[in-house]
Length: 386
Ligand SMILES: Cc1cc2nc3c(=O)[nH]c(=O)nc-3n(C[C@H](O)[C@H](O)[C@H](O)COP(=O)(O)OP(=O)(O)OC[C@H]3O[C@@H](n4cnc5c(N)ncnc54)[C@H](O)[C@@H]3O)c2cc1C
Image (tube, rainbow, N blue to C red; front, side, top):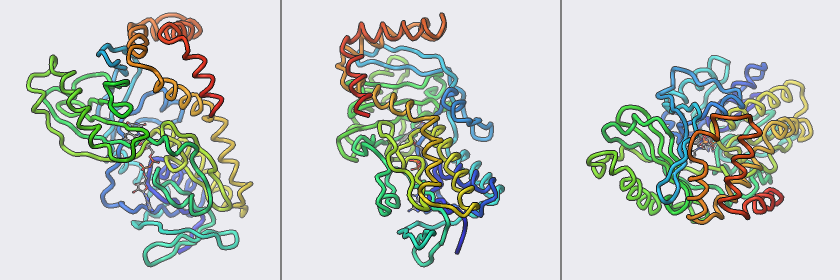
């Protein structure tokens, strides 16, 4: 088999890479090892991220609109941040973009990529029995990808900081009717952070994210489950009877930065490149696919030609990712009492509702400084470390 662009992995980045390369006129194959039974993690996104990434949330996969995010400190205090959010039906989301890929002319193939090798100016990817020869291979196969590494690329900086996670679908009367995504930090979230996302009706998801402790998240999940039930006990009768319907596992590169993401006739995108988040990785995939398609059609798939993807991505996102990593590293250095003071200071509506952007920024900076005077210094150090 031959094609212009071979995308490996129907991740959000892979789907968008395939769609944008095909829309540019390239002949595209999208390879997915679990095509018949996709069961991906990640179901919540917020308007700000979606808008910055050019992602329009479609009705066909939207399950529930959220009113914002609530950050909960170790003592149980919460700061609510109004922001339009979306809980999506992840199976319908994947189906929607797979349909879009097919109607854009992408050929879907259910198979796993084993190895890739460079032959002249093309790359050959071996499957179980076949091989596919492509002008450009896009590796969008997630945090556990091996293709980039085989080609000698270190596609992520700080891969040791991947947060290994468990996401559970849960059910309890009325639990999904809450309107805020909830986010625990400090000792309320054993392992690092924990999340609750209401899906409507009786359904919601719980996520537990663990850093620096290996990939076995189960013990942290069990601990958080107890804390979660205790936290919700006053709101829900019989919360002890809450059902866990299913569980998914994965790695979130939220604290990771992209590293070497292009080589001759190879590009890396999405989680495989340390580009975390549904909306952001869709945008990264879109940029990647359009550069891949143009390069393949122009007949120059050298590293230099493909680095246009890296330049365009950096222009839009590099500082956001760097700032995000530095902030999360700084937050994880804070003690429970400091997090409590921070959340207490942030609670109330003033932060987002009143005043100009500059006033809000000054207000937030003041709260952060009062809760922990070393924060600005730590943030600067973490930012410089990159
Ligand atoms: C538990 C959890 C919850 C999260 N929740 C959110 C959230 O609510 N909102 C948000 O914005 N982000 C969330 N994230 C982050 C988000 O999931 C990822 O950043 C984003 O979905 C990007 O996914 P990915 O690129 O890592 O690819 P993945 O979603 O891992 O997809 C990779 C695909 O490649 C396929 N594949 C792998 N190897 C091969 C191969 N050799 N050949 C063929 N196919 C292959 C896999 O089957 C899979 O379909 C969450 C992450 C985790 C772990």
